[in-house]
Image (cartoon, rainbow over all chains, first blue to last red; front, side, top):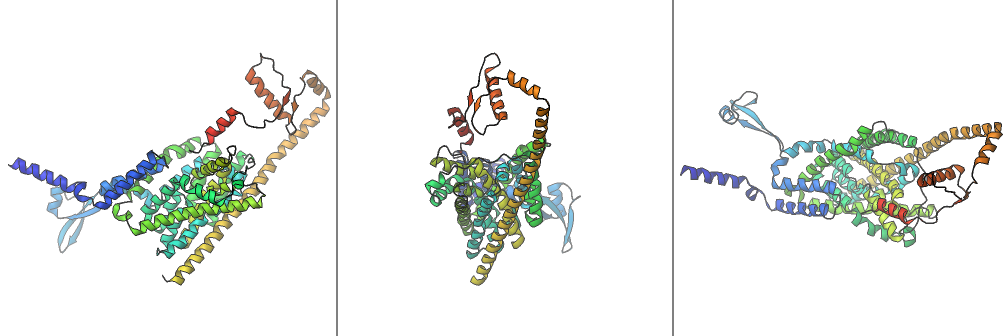
Length: 412
Length: 130
């Protein structure tokens, strides 16, 4: 009889702790959303390197919320402590109403530890280190006017800030939402952890989702704002850039931006450090590590833990829906402003600039530049805009870091 | 926050954001343009010196020049704008492809009007977006 009792108690205990009794309907909705993201990442191949870890983090935290639980301390009497841990030695003592209690710590969930890199703003600059080591700034150095397009595409950030303010968000939250328009995941995460950490899950997921959806969101805007003639413009070949210019570039950029906007220094500094170790050619091992192993490890940690912030309770709210809508508007306006400035450059240069490269001013490297290439080639199959679009594209990375510096400086 | 407050904050942020982002990036354009000019002119300077030195040597040793010309094959007819160095590089590439056993004579060098099928395939392969 006792055996059956024990068996029954064990079954009840397992059922009580299982997801069937602990999860609510919001967790199941989030599990379904995670599955949709799996589909987009695997079948549609939308930014799978980011979307897959995010979706898996989302899935896991909604199945087992304890994986993101913070460390706790339980107060135990001497008896309880000895029963649980076998000793009272080594535990801090708290006396309440004359009774001695021992502070028994409980470890946090795995993702909570990994998440500290996001919370403390460590991962985004490290991602920028890898991005810098992978980026060729040659097209931007060859055509520095691309910076104008990189700046124009940041306009969406500030217009969205206005929209968010009028929808009732605080100034800091509005700044964090606006940065989605920069289409730069690490920058969005960095700014949000500093300004509105409570919105991190929604903003990070919105930012990465829109980056993944660049090939769907941008082409209709590009076609709507340009004429057939403008889209068919063939651009002159860029001048070759010497190695010395490429080596000096990161040093100059980091000096100028760090002096003018110190808040942007962690992001721009690491971006340029990565680029310098690549271009210098004397630290190939460091460059390869930054591009591959380090980048991959940080992407896994960042992706899974950002996904793990999207629990049903946090994510399924009106503010998330507003953030997703505002983020989409920010992204669309950034792309549109880039194209419109591209049109201005088309007029000013007498038709030498194809306005399609303007939309690449939103960071999303290199996806946005590839979209410019694809839309340009639809009009004229012999047109190769990729390298021309890479100029505004990498300028957009610097531009969004500058915009982040402005937001942090003004709103923090 | 009242409507007026929202409007004030929004207008301030729009103005500050636009101005600073554009000012910083325009400043960077100027700096990059400037240092690009400086580096390009600094790198071209030693080349000019070299050219002058070569001319001087050629003037001093006219015999060598004549001997070289006599031994040389007729210079291929090259399109305007192609320097002797480019002609030499193209010729060397052709010889390296066909090998020294096959006797090849390059009669003219013209810029191709359109890319070859192979070239197009290569470019498409490297730039295909999705």
